[in-house]
Amino acid sequence: MKTKILCLNVLLIFGFLVGCQERQQPAQGQKESETTTEIPAKSQPVAETWKLVKSFGVVRMVYISPAGLKDKYFIAQVLHNLVDRKKTIQIMFFDDENYTPLGFPMTDSQMLHWKATYNFNPNTGIERFVFIEITDARSSPPSLKEVEANIRPGYAE
Image (cartoon, rainbow, N blue to C red; front, side):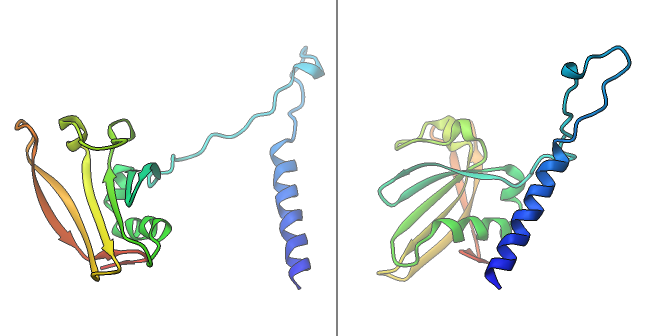
């Protein structure tokens, strides 16, 4: 049964690749060697994306798109991908990959792009997700406010 499914998947992928590589007929006066393969553009870019930018010790610095930060279920799936329920972890989310820190301390500019933090410690039972709101961007360091949310790996409310 697994072999049949694997063969079907291989055939579907092969058929898709062949379909993407169909060549156009050359225009009048154009040589066969001058034809090009057109690849259709994506209709919409993927709005919800994320990337693990840096990992050190128990800390993970993660870029997550602004659209992804608005979707608590997407955040729960990102956490599901990053969290090992047997290990202590702190995940810090940033909305701009260029301002995602590679270590501590953070600069004021980096802090302005810090949008959320998740902490989990299996030894103490602490599990906490907070969104970070900037209350005063002109102060140094910027003034922040934490807003708790019921989000954890694979679960959002």
